[in-house]
Image: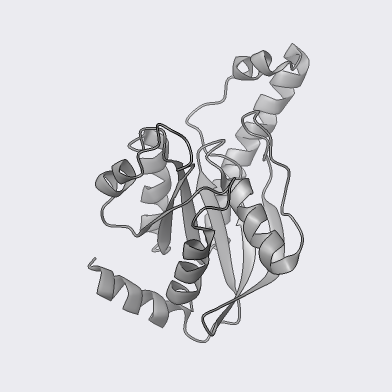
Length: 207
């Protein structure tokens, strides 16, 4: 869909809504919670959840309601839904190098698997989605294709976030090339680089 038609469709879709349920989707450790936290802290003063280097730190849907953003004269009220990371499989052994015991790792793996199922079910409650991708990794993965396919099937508007552009091996242009049909915001959630671009795009597209 051409950009102009996409923007017009979004504006028509959201016209008259009092609040938007915005889902954060992506692979584990792509930066979903970091972005959700930055947005929530900036506009509500409270974080959404805990960030960790251990994969699948977010294993249940984390919510923050009535986050009101005001940018360039536009106001957008959102309910943030930080989803568990999506993976094609969860192996407890991937947690062992982080110092977890086998029992802890197995428990985490079970919770992560339930979280993935919950994240997919929550598609029924999502009005729009930020799909977060690590700009230092190959974006053309089965996980990203599956996430975008499910969102497209349900006609949920999508904005891609090319996160972690602060990393020396980041190549956000690969995300644009892999998924040219979607708008892409390049940023570093950790450092706050270009976060204002994300805010501008959200208020412009989702009002």
